[in-house]
Structure formats: C-alpha cells, structure tokens
Length: 427
Ligand code: EPU
Image (cartoon, rainbow, N blue to C red; front, side, top):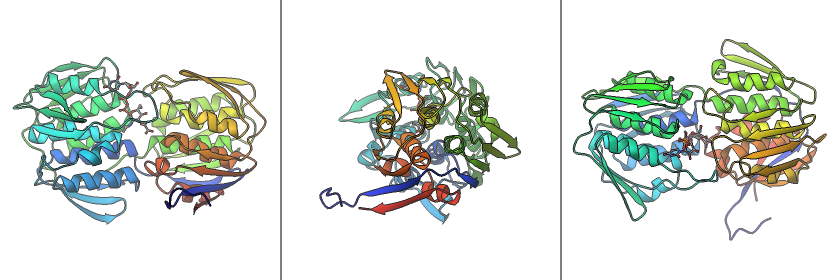
C-alpha cells in the first residue's frame, strides 16, 4: 500500500493482452458539454440538456453554475434542467474556476449576459503554453475592457457591439468564447478563420435552439446576428463524443480486436478512419455505427495532428499506442500543442521504443508491450495508457486517474463490457 499522507489513491489494474470484442455506446461530447453549460448563462429562463456526459468536469461546471445563482435539477446523471433566470455575476468563483481550463467560457457567457465578469485565470495544463490572447482580442474588439487582477481576469463592457474578428489561429476556445460574447451583442459579429470542430457546431445549434441567430458554424466564417434575449424553455441533446468514439476505434486496432461503436457521427471520424485503413485496419461505417477490426500488426504511418477536419490532437496519444507495435518506424508531428508527448515516457516503460523531440516523435515498432506501473499526465494520455495496458502482456497499473475521470464516462466499465480485464482499486 502506498503512503500518500493518508489520502486514498485509486488505480486501475489491467491484465492483458485482450483483443477487445463487442459493442460500446458513445456518450455526449465533453468539449461540447463544457461550453454548453456556461452558454446556459445567456438564457433568461430554463433549458434542459440531455446526453450530458457523466464526468467530473461536468459536475464541476454545474457547481459553478449553482454558485452563480443558477438552479440545476438532475433528472438522471445525463439529463439536467438549468434555470438561469436569476444570475449573480459577482459571486466568488475565483478559486473553483482556476481548477480547470474550460472555465474560460464563463468570460464570454457572463460578459454577454451581465456586461461584467471576473474569473480565476484558467489553470495551466500538461500540454504546454495555453494562452487566451485570442479570446481577449475578441472581447476587446466587441467593446470590452479586460484586466488581470491578482490572478483573476476581469472583463467589463457597457455595451457589446458586433464587429469583424479575424483569428490568427483557428482556436476552438476563442471561436466559442467570442460566439458566446456576441450572441446578445448589438449588430452582427463575424468570426473569420473560425475553428470548425464538431463541438463548435453543437454549441451554435444549442444557442440557436434557445433563440440565438448564428450562421456558418462548421465553416471558417461564422456570423452571429445579435438578439435581444435568449428565452430558452427548450431542450437540447449533446452531440456524441467524437474523441471517445475515436478512442475506441484505436483501441480496437491496438488490441487486435473487433468493436462496434454505437451512437457516433461517422462523418466526424473520417480522418481517423482514413488512417486506420492506411495502416491495414478495417472500418465499416453504417448509419450511426462504426465497426472497427484488425487481427494483424498494423503498418507504420506518418501523422500530423491538425484542426478539424484533420487528424485530432486529442487522439494523438491513442494513435501513439497503435504505432508503438506497428511494423516499422512511424512519425507523429503534433501540430496543435507544444508538449503532448509526455505519455511516451510511460509507454517506453512498457517496452515501447519512442523518441520524442519537441513536437515530433518517432515510434520504432516493437513486437508487443509489457505491463508496468504508469502515471497519467493528462486526459488523453490516460486513455492511451489504458489501451496500452489492455494490449500489453501481463499487468499494468495506471495511476493519476483524476485526469481520466475529467473527460471519460465510466471508462473502465465500457472497456470491461468489451472484454478487458480491468478493475479500479483504492490503495
Ligand atoms: N492559442 C493561442 N491563443 C489563444 C488560444 C489558443 O495561441 O488565445 C493556441 C493554443 O496554444 C494552441 C492552438 O491555439 O496551440 C489551438 O488551441 P485551441 O484554442 O483550439 O484549444 P482549446 O480551446 O484550449 C480545445 C479542447 C482541447 C483540444 C483543443 C484542440 C476544450 C475544452 N478543449 O482546447 O481538448 O485539444 O481544443 O482541438 O474544448 C482534450 O479534450 O483533451 C483537450 C485538451
């Protein structure tokens, strides 16, 4: 038993190798949920949100909404009603908002609703520098003044007025945040070089369902015609999680398995499908289902992560596991984040031969991985290490599960149902 000063430490114990077989259901998208929850603050009324993923980031966001005066009613762990008729934008949410990155959406939402907001600066993460200069540029272009006060960011606007905003980088966060700030602004806001990820479309669809007038989400020009009020009084179901579906697709290949992934939007996974086929795997898309299977060693590949519709950075570590045992040497270039190869140190403990240098990593394929104790450094690294454990010979112990619980609903149960020998224990 490890001594962490009396704190109970959870870990996953995985015994492999197991070729995964069976069906898995995909939950609602985490990165849509953490934007839609703050978006409810723009509504003068209530809304119902269905297909909400049951993950710790969502629970934390609901706590923040309650601190701000919203009433959250849980019908099931995946279905809530949020009443945002009365909001107190002066509530003390500084500490809690520092805890996670997606709290930055509160700036756009509360600026739009109340004209003033102060939140803790979003905490760093393990992916390298994560600036929000483009978000701030957008708020200021709409007429807000921003300042940093004792580790908090404050934004104030007497009035927000629509304008044209060009994003130097097609940032997911900046696109959504500017959309949130401009929904109730006067006139039309145009976001040029907007990000096109599926969750951007989902947030726009949610806001439109509640009464907003947003056009072009999913293309690189989004037009937001300001409306006087969002009345809400409607329900919305969150889009299936593209990254969770991709995680199971890559798990099928890494474990030489055969999985049917249900409740996903196959179009969102075309870049992953193309890469799986390129390395020899099989993918059959049928309606909202994807069957992915391969019982052989995949061939090597070269991959660059890019904004949607390119290969997603959030599936890069899971792909790294697949390439660790591919035939030949593969290269991954990380095109979004400065530092997203920390998981490769853990895979090397399991017998992989990966050399990571800056934004590139070289995967010299080995015959098989061997179980070892490994430590999760971020959410997607966590998913990758679970897949590695299921595909490896022997026992893998995975630590630092809080990263995984932030963004994957019932992950070990979902893997267990398709055959993995995986259990969570408290040390
Ligand atoms: N960037 C700037 N300035 C900004 C904003 C972004 O320079 O003001 C840079 C970033 O440093 C990065 C690039 O632009 O190099 C793209 O960042 P983006 O803003 O698109 O990322 P994000 O909104 O912070 C979201 C997801 C991430 C995902 C990225 C890229 C959420 C809550 N997070 O982050 O998800 O990796 O988009 O697709 O939606 C994850 O789910 O594991 C995760 C990290």
